[in-house]
Image 1 (cartoon, helix red, strand yellow):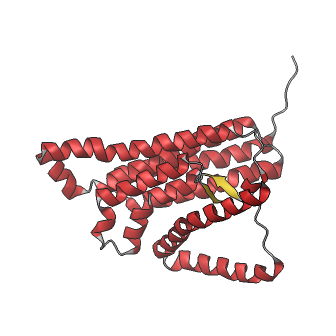
Image 2 (spheres, rainbow, N blue to C red):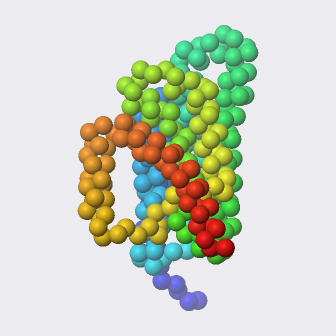
Image 3 (cartoon, rainbow, N blue to C red):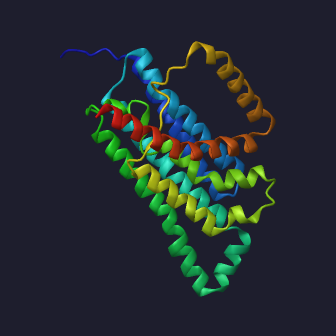
Length: 261
């Protein structure tokens, strides 16, 4: 029997993916107990580790189909299940839960309509990930170079939890951000954007002219300073900027497609 050597390098990217999954599952636990900041933080940390696992695999030369499938399973839990569960738990605050227990109609809405938003997000995330895996071996036209097809799962999770980020940035004083209608809108919007084929910003092949490198470095330092000084307000501004970038991407995508045809 021939013994096969174990490639130790192949363990590292999968370990990063597992760490991302651990943060995603831990977010579910934090949401269950009402630790909202930690629940949001764990989703953001999951996104950070998800960003690096593929890069680590390519850097070490150990990319594999197994790693891609593992990454998709981790993404589904961390960015499809955890955000929806968090937003449902957060919207159903103590006062609303007491009202739900007293009122049969309110109980029906909470269990049915509000929970349906969380289910919708999970199903749309699963659809996106399945399509992404099916397209791994397909070559996309050149006009897709600077764009993702739809919103990536981590960014979709960010859109889904945007109301709670705004709420935390406002010092937990603006109750509107916690309203089921506002939360439901972002869950549906996030799900649609993940499952859609709308072009969104991709930085994978972005080339920055040398004259702008210094300005970009300053912007990165300001972002880091903002995250340490006032993380929720900074994340709110980043989220707003990302939402505003979507119509801009659509405009340039149409322009590039016309030029390519």
